[in-house]
Image (cartoon, rainbow, N blue to C red; front, side, top):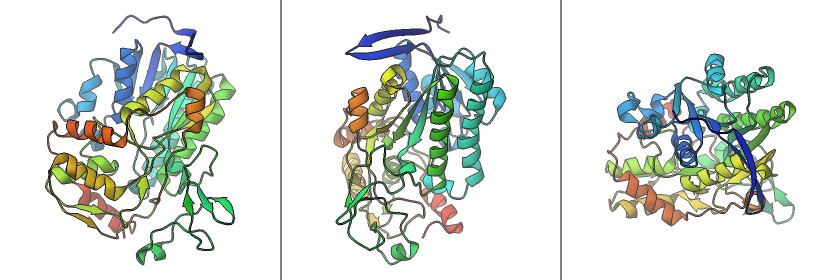
Length: 398
């Protein structure tokens, strides 16, 4: 291990107050975002500890061989194999840390709707244990907690009604979607204009996953200031890029589509293919997170992280097919998952103003980086149908 450097240094960089803390714990640090963040922080001279359970859903049965993410960090960090649901593991991991970046969580909108206890235990109880230790064990030296929140807490996000102004529609009705009508409606069935979702938008998640992320964020933002710790929350949009799991059929539309294409399987598009998401490249997410970790202007704040642009799912599928040069059929199925939203994209005004963050990687550039990396990886088994069958048995896939 590297010799530990002085813990906390404050200085002014480009007119912004920067608080540099040298010992950082990243929970879930062997995952997609966590491992990329760890490597970048190591480059910047930080000492990184990772607490991760190496979930088989993400890392495979033998992470030493099946997880490029784990392999990329294992010899560069202080790695603790453990779980955030264990108080003992938390206590071990928190020793000597200046800051915590809390990524460890179960992720996946669809899966969360039938693995409810698991999602609540890991995401909510895991966060509660961390905060309980920080509140009651005065021997720790943690000065900041950065928590990974999610755009899923917004539910459908922000719209403009032609007469009522800003409105926040509730989840779509199953009977409408069964009839092939997937558009978001307000109570009077007026056509609504989609707007970028700002941080002060209504919070009304439509999935168990979204509820647990809201809970995580609220606990951190509420408890930390009362115990002298600076909290920061990032509501990430759909993060993608080199390094994400290509074998997890529960989350990550670009990786799911890529695995289908490389197996020569057709892509089945949910709904009508016009549903949109804000796809943000991993490098930009890491940049935003480091700003939140280092800059005092971030303390006590909640930020959206995305590109501020909405891209529909059909465009994603066709762009990937073109990038790989593999011609597979695209079928718009009309099927849908209960708990999914129609649209959401980020308003970046706040993070741009306070942290000077501007995403640098366009969708076209990001797809090129991502597909170049995918083509260097082994073709993974396509398990999407298996995951959909699970949802169908639970009555959640129509």
